[in-house]
Image (tube, rainbow, N blue to C red; front, side):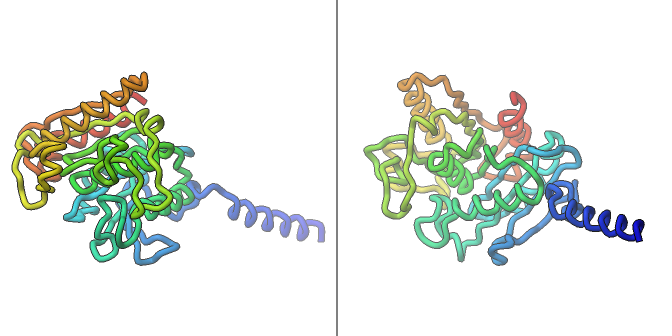
Length: 289
C-alpha cells in the first residue's frame, strides 16, 4: 500500500512537471531544420521557424521578412546557416497577397501585418523559450519597408534592424503624413510615432551596387522622387543621413550605416550569394552583442 501510494505520487509529480516544464525543453520542435508552421490562433497564417542546435532560455529572436515575391522559405533556408552559427531562433513570416496587400506599410488595408507578426513572435517565444523582449529584424525590398516601419511603430520591441534595399522610406518628419512621414494616420489607428524612442535603434541599410534601375517594382511617384531620390541607392543614403541628423539633434549617438553590396542587382538571392548580405546582416545585428 505504501509503495503504491508513493508510485502514484511520483506519477502525479511527473505529469505536473511535464505540464509546467518550459516549452523549450519539450521535445515538440525539431532543432537544426527549417520548420513550416501554422499559427495556432489562425491556421491560415503560415510562418517558417528555425531553432538552433545550441542555445537555451532567453535565446534572441531574429526575424526576416520577404519582399513582394513572398519568398519566405528562401529567406528561412538561406538565413538558417547564420541562425545556427549565432545561436538565435529565426522566424520568417509569410504574408500572402490576398490577406496582406499592404503589408509593406504595416497594413492600412487587409490584415494588419504588424499585429500578425506580434502574434507569431508570442507563439514562438512560448514554444521555444526564446526572448521576445527585443527583436532583431531584417527585411528585403518590400520586407525592408515593413521592417523599418515596424521599428518606427514599435521601438520598444526592436533591438536592431537591417534593411535590404527598400524601394522607399518613411522619413522621421512629423509634417508629413504616414507613410511618407510620421504624422498620425487614421489608416493605422492606435499607432503613434515617438522619435525619442525609435531614434535609439541602430540600423544598417544594405543596397546592391547595381541596384540603380527604376524597375516596375520601384515607387516612381514624383513626390517620392523629389523627397527621397530616384533610385534605391540614393533613397537609402538620404534616409540614413536624415536619421543621423535627427538623432544628433536629440543628442543621440545612435549608429546608422549604409553599405553597397558588391556585384548585386535588386535580387535577394544574388545579394546573399555575391554581396555577402547574410554575413553583413548578422555581423551588424549580433557580433557586437
